[in-house]
Amino acid sequence: MRLRNKLCIGMSLAPTWLSNEGWRAEDSGIEGLYSADFAVDIARRAEAAHMDFVFRPDASALPVPVLEQSFGFSSLDPTLLLAALVRETSKIGLVTTISTTFSHPYTIARQMMSLHWMSRGRAGWNVVTALQGNQNFGLSEMPSSAERYERAEEFVAAAQSLWASFPAEALLVDKAMGRYADTDLIKPANHEGRNFRIAGPLNIPRFPGPRIPLMQAGASAGGVALAGKIADMVFAQTLDMTTALQTRQRLSDAAQAAGRDPASVRLLPGLSLYLGDTRAEARELFLANHQRVDRAQRIDRIRAALGIDLADWPSDRPVTPADLQDGETARNSGHGIILRDLIAREALTVDQLLERPETLASVHWQIIGTVDDAVSTISQWFNAGAIDGFVAVPGGSPRSLDLALEQLLPRLAEAGLFRAAYSGETLAAHLDEA
Ligand SMILES: Cc1cc2nc3c(=O)[nH]c(=O)nc-3n(C[C@H](O)[C@H](O)[C@H](O)COP(=O)(O)O)c2cc1C
Image (cartoon, rainbow, N blue to C red; front, top):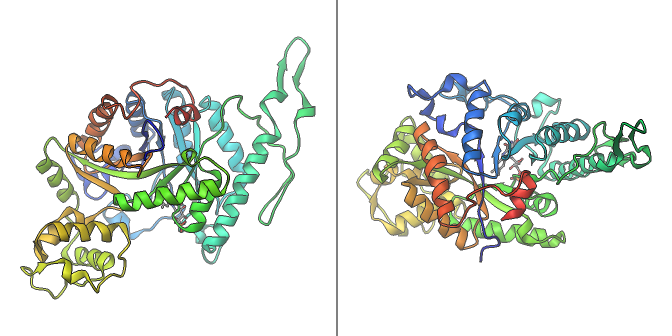
């Protein structure tokens, strides 16, 4: 059973449609990657499609070898990039990513409230604990998952105390009386925890409107527990519907354990969209985009997902469900489930399996097909209660991005699954509408 009436949809500003081979196309626009222009263009078009928010993921380290072939994790600072969108848009939410492992709550509480003021209530914060980057912050190794989540929870609590320390009502701006603020209402934050000691108050008042919605991205028990306590949205990796249903249930349980309504934690998986005017065109786009993934890498992916090593198998040997019974290193991974379903459904040889898009699967839920295919799959997942929406991560080409923004979103609206116009002006209003 679905928990909401309408999908909540975000647009990733990580230029996934330029990743792999995508940036090499004549018209890719890659030259503008380190300017705000490309994000301005997409944010305006995402707003024209009435999306809930644009979203910028981030990393605090640069894996260098990847840069030989693509732009990898090199990028502008996400919060500054979103600040550049404030005056170029007026309705759409602006969700940045900030790691609680490598930052300080006072700085971040101030930055987030500044973005919220400047955008008149449209800021959102993707609270991540990060997977790498310790060497850039004086840490000899990454803190354990438990330590990172403990710090994350304290970090958010400290930021919330700081936001509360200078309430909106304290701001009087009474010109006649010459009274700027009611200082009786401004209180210290007095945060004292294991990781931070912060007196406060914050040097910017709270925005006189709805909250700064929080997103969380992290799938471990600690990540899900944190989401249950604090998140409005969860950005997740769910390659298949079974995993999405399980994740939705885990989030509902975590929300309930924290005394919150399960519907207030929205599950928004990344959705990689390779769209074409025909299925063949979409598939070709996908394969062209992955042309440098060689046979050995494909065999590696199957080994990781299913535990079977096809390296020495004759290329015309059929791969059958019987082959999988004992090989199951990652049996429950989303990629493993997708490959198992495919092998059960179709009689494929080793060569045919290695050619299939499912073998290359992205880190996200993936739809390779027409706009009709996308509408039907999204409706199916939504109606089954597996998702509350998604974060679009279009792949392959600017054309695939165009189809997502200009055809898919209007079609979802026509189907009654998405808004046809904004009724609110803030990110919280968009989220609470559905
Ligand atoms: C879908 C998804 C997106 C993520 N995006 C980011 C990101 O943009 N920046 C970042 O530093 N970490 C990101 N993370 C990492 C998480 O914040 C977290 O550190 C990591 O997943 C380990 O926690 P876990 O064991 O709970 O999954 C992401 C994780 C997931 C699952």
